[in-house]
Image (cartoon, rainbow, N blue to C red):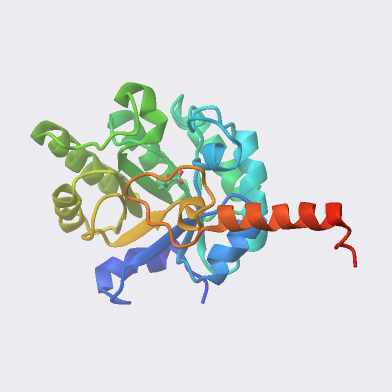
Length: 262
Ligand code: KIV
């Protein structure tokens, strides 16, 4: 049975199935097919694709048009998982109307079943409330929110001081109150993620946030060993980048030596 937002919500509330939620990212039809076939519960078209697939240094340059092209491609490859699409930087922060418009495009044009957006301050919470009122399911994202990289001064762990930890916990609670159906907790201390998971009825999805979250997400290019660099908390399960270089080298060698075509 295909995964729905309702199923993700009930997952934590009913405790069934009694296992963590799995989330992997995708950026094109092939990566979408791979993670869907692998059985991920949620496929996230994360704005990390700006770095992974488009070669930018941060997620900030990604446009709504870029995202729509990639999300449509992923949609063609995903049959079972819940498809969640990130709202690009400044496609939603500018006004509730802009947020509804950008989310509408992701649902109407790309076939997303939910959108994800970053942050938990009052402005974002109001946007989440309004999106949910209009029937647009929202996944929140707190802790290290890469769209605020200029404020953080790097991809640094967040929530290390008591004041920061209190703020992140309050943000997560406010997002739940506003109607978010789940929340990504990125690069925060394990104990803080544990406290947030305990305090919320909606599932928390961790990335670099330890074992106590209700689910885990990683960037698929890191999992497969395709990305040139991986964050310290990522686990690399294959070395596809090296294998791909070797296969391409083999082709060049065989063509040059006359071994291929035979
Ligand atoms: O953009 C992304 O891939 C994400 C995940 C890392 C959660 O937001």
